[in-house]
Image (cartoon, rainbow, N blue to C red; front, side, top):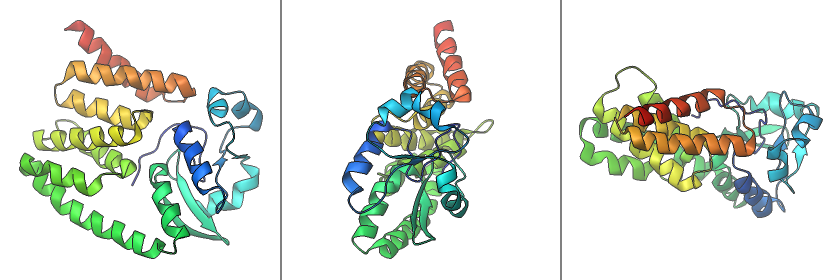
Length: 243
C-alpha cells in the first residue's frame, strides 16, 4: 500500500532509515539473510555515498546478484521490503513493517499475521469513512493502524494529494502521518513529506515549514534523491517566511 519514493536502493529489506536497517540485521540476521539490494545504482556509486556509510555492517547486494528475487518480489516503491524463501515470495510491503513480518515468520505464525492485517484493513476502511465525517472517531482509526507507518503514510498521502480535500480528510491525514512520524522517530523523509503536506493543507503553515526543514535535513543526511520532497519543503518554508 506504499507510494513510490525516489531512492536508488531498492531493498529486499531496504529501508530509508539506516539505524532501523541495522536493527533489522542485528535482530534477525541469525535466522534470515537481511540486506539491501541495489537497483539502478552501481556498487561503486553506492559505496561512495553517505547512505552506505550509515549502513555500515549491513550486507549490500548488487543488482545482478538479486535479479531473480527482484523479478519475483516486483517492488513498486523505493524502498520496498520482501520476504523471499526457497524461490517463493511470502510477503511484500513497506520496509517499516518488515520486523513484525520476520518475527511472525520465525515463530511459524505468518499466515495468522497476514490474516490479522487483512482484518485490520477491513476495519480501518469503515473507520476512515466514519472519521472523515465525524472527527471524534479519528483516534480509533489511528489506533487500528498504529505501528504500521508505511500503511499510514500511504493512506494519508492519498487523502491530501489532491485539490481541495475535505476538512475531515485533511484532519485524518494529519493524525495518521503524525503517528507514522512518531513511530519511526522522524527519520524517514517520505513520511515527513506526507506530514508536511497534510499540515499545509490544514492551513498550519508554520508547522508545515518546521516539518519541511526536517525533510531537507534527512534527505541531505542520506543523500536521498528526493527532489520533489525537497521542493515541496522549500515551498512550505517560503510561505511561512512570507507571513
